[in-house]
Amino acid sequence: MRSFLTRRLAVLSLAHFTIDAYSSFYLPLLPLLVVKLGLDYSKVGSLVALGSMSSSFSQPLFGMLADRLRRPWFVAAGPLVAAVFLSAIGMAPSYGVLLTLLILGGVGVAAFHPQTAALAGASSPRRNLAMSFWITGGTLGWALGPMFATFTAERFGLERTWVSAIPGILLCGLLFAWFSRVPAIAHEHRVRTRLADLRPVARPLGLLYATVVCRSAVSSGFATFLPLWVHERGWSVHAGGVLTTIYLTLGALGGLFGGWLSSRVGGRRVVMQSFALAIPFFAAFFLLPQKPGIVCLVIGYFLMQGSLPVNVVMGQELSPRHSSTISSLLMGAAWGVGALLIGPIGALADRAGLNTALMVLSSLTVVGMVCATQLPRSVRAAVAPVSEPESS
Image (cartoon, rainbow, N blue to C red; front, side, top):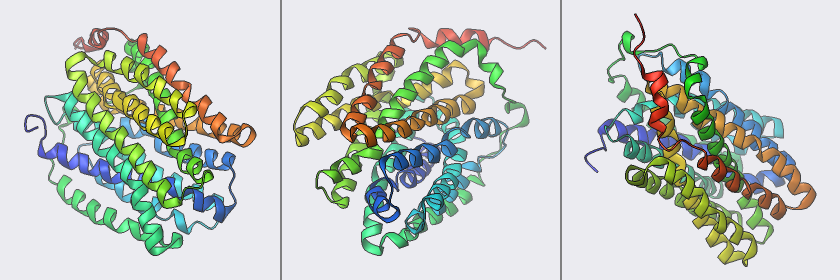
């Protein structure tokens, strides 16, 4: 552990834990918000999809800006914005206000991820393990966010969920103090990134992008609708929050395991096998009775999330000079496209039932596996066109 876990990586992972805990804060509260605001599945799906756009599609812009910054201020500013707005969703008096809060909180999420991913990858010589540790910090936060939300709503009421912003605000103050002492990046080490610079690695980057879209759509879709699925079957809001936390926690552990495994068998193999092994478990969710089906779903999610840190590391290795931008494409824009698919899934659930809609959603695991099989056997070989010294 000491060989890769530096103090900076620990701080970055704590910040990632914080912001992603607020990112998933709204998930177990959806049954309560559905009743309060009179939402149907279409509106729930559109809410998640549109809210995710602000935290996803703006990441490439923040990524290009982060490649030019001398200090990593986004590391603390992002969680602060997310904590303030995302914790206030229980106060929303209408669908429009709820969407606005999610969008504003999403801006903080977007500002945080690209620069922090680049800093985490560069914080240790063992990049795969460093990235898996950083990503696991975020996914553990994403996993525990629902339990945090249900505790807050039960203790203070839905209208006072804003009190949950207090821990995030205090932590962000500490982060600002910490990163004011981080050495500034020298001017000659900063780059001016254009998306055209990535053209030589477009094919492997595009395949990685497609696998991330498929995984994020399945991940976000089930995280969104699972509390509603179990609520339909008589489970309480608290029980749905606990189940969602267990589901997301196993995904976080899957990411950590995948990062460790990739350093031994290679990233491409981990990405392919994560999809291939997950497919039968997702199928079993629909074929088995409710409780064993949920167990299979959790196992399938654990396996699928094994490729989460691997995708980002493989992308960063394609062009290390543009690591923030590539991170923003794979964690932001790709996740955003995946989240946009939740809108049509919600509409399909209104027409054909939630179970049928989730079946369609889970079929993307097959698409992800097909894309993974087309990845080059050695992603490093694709670096050659962009790693040659520039002529003076």
